[in-house]
Amino acid sequence: MTTLAIIGSGIVGRSLLFHLTKENFPFDEILLFDSPEFTPSCSLNSTAIAALRGITSGHSPLGDLILNGFQSFCRHIEQDSPEGVYPIFQYSAHTKDSEVFLKRYPDAQMVTSFDEFNFFENIYISREKAFMVKPPLYLDWLLKKSETKMKIKKINQFVTKVTPKSEVEIQTVHGEIYKAHKVVFAAGAASRFWLSLFPESLLKTSKPVQGAYLEFKNFFCGDKSFSLTLDGANVVYRHETKEFLIGSSSQDVGHFLAPENELREIYSTLRKNVQFEWPHYDQGQILVGHREKAKKREPYIINKNPLYFLGGLYKNGFTLSYKITEMLTHQLRENS
Image (cartoon, rainbow, N blue to C red; front, side, top):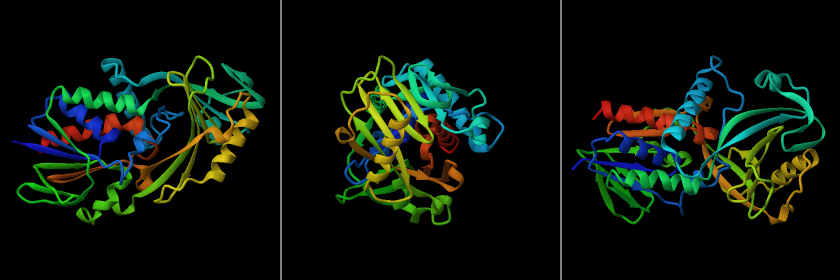
């Protein structure tokens, strides 16, 4: 029996599952390791917007990859109609005449009112098509679709040791040992725990970056979902679930202690510029996720057969996950 182990059950791990089963990949069984207690999934603690944010082709390899990833995600939505993904507009705005902003958004208009937004002063604002993801729904859909075509064994334990032999031995925190023919590490910022397996790789330059934001439940803000980024501060409204999100802070740290002062400042900045009936700050719950930031912010696929490392998606998890796992699926097929 041929077995594949995937360490990590977030957006990357489940996108990979979906590709493998969609292409009828020849594994008899997949072991899916997940440890929400020790390494909480960043996918479930994210504002989860898939948008290009002004990126166009021909400026950088990373930009081209993000563009290709977004186009691939669009095709996926069109062809597969997954649950938990909704088309929206991403609004990007700036309060000053910024050369950098206007270069990225050449169609930006200087207004005090734009679509459903009203501002206290003139701002520059641009609009683009995007997708809003409700992570629990989408991740659950990916897994359920995959389980209809392949035997998947879910193991809710943290992996402490991986030993490549004729078959790879995978030991968990409970001392249990599992065996697989190939192992894919898709654990985001937690990948640093297995760095010893690839001491010479670019994983040495990757680091966890904390992202924190406020979530307000049962808040009504109109009949349309949207995402607005104003001077780097984000406000997201999920009409389908009446969730209102404000953030996000970003810190190069490995802990989950949120910078509340920074979140209060973001909340205050948005409130001073956008005319909303804002929820009270203290009604919000602070959520924290850890993203993996690789060198030059570029995602990576590292192959040391039978081991594979996949990560570095940073802020582009819901834009790039579908594309980069498609690329890894091809590698796995070539090396099978």
